[in-house]
Image (tube, rainbow, N blue to C red):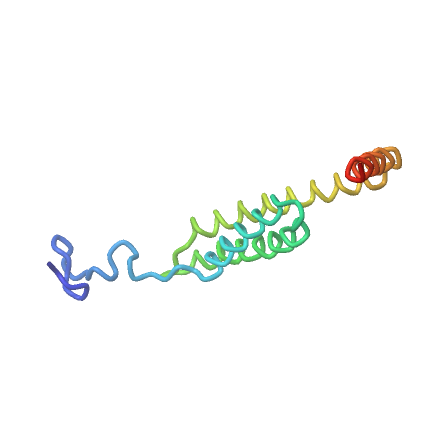
Length: 129
């Protein structure tokens, strides 16, 4: 067994810590982009927390872009994590906007609101019986 500070066989002068980017740091922005993307997507999919998910998704998109820029620096990894966070955040934003548009359309349609009110009234009448 070789310690991490000992040279790796077949690679003179290179230690295990620098081989293959093992010693490189993952971008914090990439990690947070992924966390915000997952949280935003789960929030949007509940439909009740869609506004919260939309905000989390926007924050995740910004962090994903920052992560992709910082991943270009030498010694910083996390490009894949940043891309994953960016994709999930973008999905959260798109689904959140679609839900908001659908909700706005239903609320602004008087016939749909009247039908919904009639269904609620019918359910109340059934509960009273």
